Image 1 (cartoon, one colour):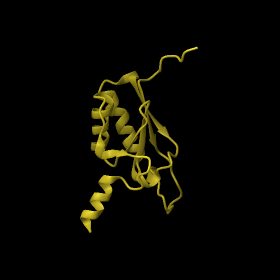
Image 2 (cartoon, one colour):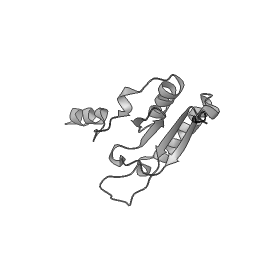
Image 3 (spheres, one colour):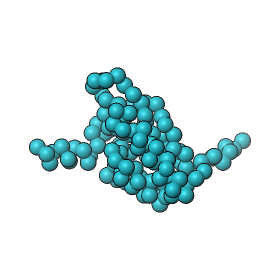
Length: 124
């Protein structure tokens, strides 16, 4: 038996989890993930991705301190994004062109995204 063809070419899971106020890990929702997810849905539609890409809200993706976070399948590429500009870059570069946005990618062992660590070091 073979698997059926995928219904979507890509599936984006955007964390919109909410933790209690003051939780030490924070949460994606308090960092604006719902508005960023809505922006990504609109940007994907505007880019003509229609039924090729599905952008969904997700519960906790367990990377709260790095958020807002999202993961794109089938590639399994994780991103952090903080602005609509970040979202637009992910839509254009990853979803439309098939590339990667290196500066926003998250890696399995990462505790603080590299671009945030550099920014914090520069502020010191």
